[in-house]
Length: 347
Image (cartoon, rainbow, N blue to C red):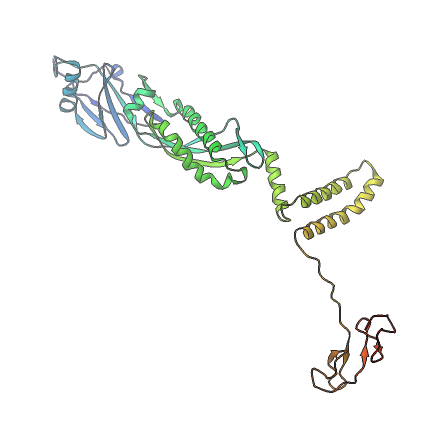
């Protein structure tokens, strides 16, 4: 019986096909010793005979007479080698990288924050993966289907990813304040924790991106309030005074009592100013000291200001009239007087 020539190949025109089973039944032909195999780049061909993996072929052109038939003969003790066609399955596995697979937390992740207690966190991003071990992938996930696409496995991978993210958040004990600034670190932590699970099904997580980690609106509001109070210092008295000032502002806007609103409105601005002034003083700002000017007299020669008790001008050296003055009020007093006749200051 003359054997026909058959070239087994797969032209992948899709963007999401992971595994393709060659349709021998549809073509009405089977493998024989004149058959050839073409495996393109980013592909792997797996020959399965009676449920056993016979061989795996990487990119290239193969003559099955020399490459596969000796293996099949050994597996099945096949007596009629090269004389009749043989029935087997050929699976093409796509080994390229599948990128930009979106993920997100459908339900919020509960985490214990050291400052805010138990809060809910949401996150979203993207990841990329590829088939790393085609044989393991075929045995663990694909089975005997005629085709297998990314949609058949993506939801399972997302579940694995979010589980790893939840564990990483719990183990890190990071504050909600620091979540946004540590996404790159979380990328690496989650990748390390989940890689073994991907390897167990023949896959590899090639990239992971955590684009955003968000907290509930009430926590965001608390963070904004804390940032505002951080300008004045993280002190209890500051928080109480600013809260009181805010309460006065809200009361001033209340239209329920016109007289009370008018009174509070007049005092709100004053109260707000006082609250902030007190806050700044409690933060360490010292009030300006009142400068007390000391009494002085003028040199009759150069008109320079000199001390009341000076006998000579410090500027020109001119001898000055010796007069006594009260250091408190500056009034002239008698030389040798013990008290000022004007203010009573002891001299």
